[in-house]
Image 1 (cartoon, rainbow, N blue to C red):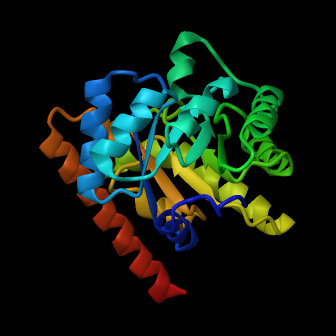
Image 2: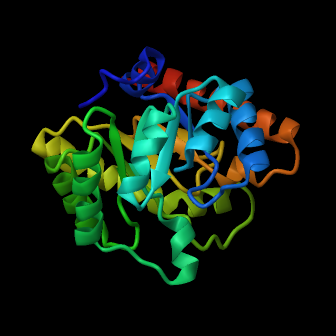
Length: 258
């Protein structure tokens, strides 16, 4: 894995299975919004911020948060300038924002994007999202194929597919179920194939379910709307702190259990 170019603190969080990534949105190019989210992430205790693939947004997010930056896109050629601006990681996906537009990504397309990205950016870790619309067995196979072509991190998604039927915590669990199922399925396949590549569980998670992601085999979690749809910066900071607390608590439980 190409972690030699990652900040040490980020590598340690991945290794200890406690990474918290805050996602501002692949199609969110609003500078004020990204700055607010980045600042809240930094003050709240996040480890990584995921922003749209734009050099100016990278610089804004670094300044506002003091944290490493991941840039997301489905256009590999855009990664070059973003990395020059200071991005520490590149990511293909998350695809959730494309589904309402009727834009879907198949396995071959995602593999091609990964290959193109690796050719352009050789020394920066590449994270790739596995489309949740694929059946779980196909998600697992795509994850294995992505590792074969050089992906350093695999990310799951699923909130668009989830339709919670209950309020409260039960509804939050229902919302997270697709991405949790994907992580567990891919983690099992990786274990069987002796693949040691980190998994980031993203999309539809909350403070009630981030612990489940780590119990399912994730090395990190990615959260977006649970933070970035809040009305004020103070609310965002509080939510990130709550997520950090939940992750740290789940880490203690897992360590005590195993």
